[in-house]
Amino acid sequence: MITIDVKKRLQARMNAMQLDVTLQIEEGAFIAIAGESGSGKTTLLRILAGLEKAKGSIKVGNEIWQSERFFLPPQKRRIGFVFQNYALFENMSVEQNLLYVSKDKELSQHLMELTGLSEFAKRYTNHLSGGQKQRVALCRAFMRRPKMLLLDEPLSALDPQMRIKLQQDIMTLHKEFGTTSIIVSHDPSEIYRLATQVYVLENGRIIQEGTPKEVLLKMQGSQKFSFEGEILDIFKADVIYIAVVSIGQQIVEVVLGSREAEQLRVGQKVTVSTKAFAPLIRPID
Image 1 (cartoon, rainbow, N blue to C red):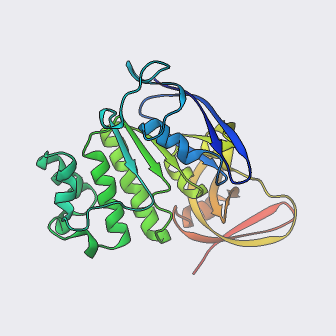
Image 2 (cartoon, rainbow, N blue to C red):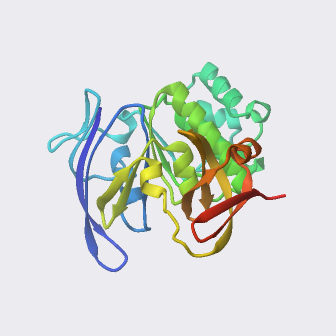
């Protein structure tokens, strides 16, 4: 179990606020932190990493990272941190960037194989695409075999298809290493794909928590509409099928017939339209 109970005075855009967060997280969980800009999300990650000090306590399993009288420095916390900017050494190759963290060559080769970077091992990182650079940053975070992986909007600068690929890589590494992962994200489809639990911060405090479906799902009313979206999930509930669709910054559920469920697939772009209370979902050609 990971126990977090921290407080820190923050200067927000217009006024000061108090970050006051108490959490208990199962080890091995994938947690998403959502909320408006300036709500304290990144500060919370930096406190967990030991990059900022705060009042309170942090305990990971049987190991105390912080208490009122003790502070474990960042380099002694088994933390992997992936930022939005890649923070790579551009005068080093992909392999050298990984081995700079740890001289475990076997682990570096394994990570490159898992993320499709093996053919770029000797290439300098300033010659890589944005998606490739972020994969290097992700692999570098796992070179420490972290107990906790912290991701601060790591995929927000990438195009949609690359984001999906990197989300798959993140989940693969999360499961293989059994790490506890905490991601800050504004993207509801990203949160839905990755997280098992979501916490929403507002003005430094948790105002909502639950599964991604409980927190993110927003049902539409009876107005007529037609929107493009992406299918995140299709599942059977009793005798009906349900599609979970990402539309802009919202996630909706649409009831499907058996024929529709057979024709549609996860990841497919669709249009969702309705008249009164009967949504229709169609693939985009």
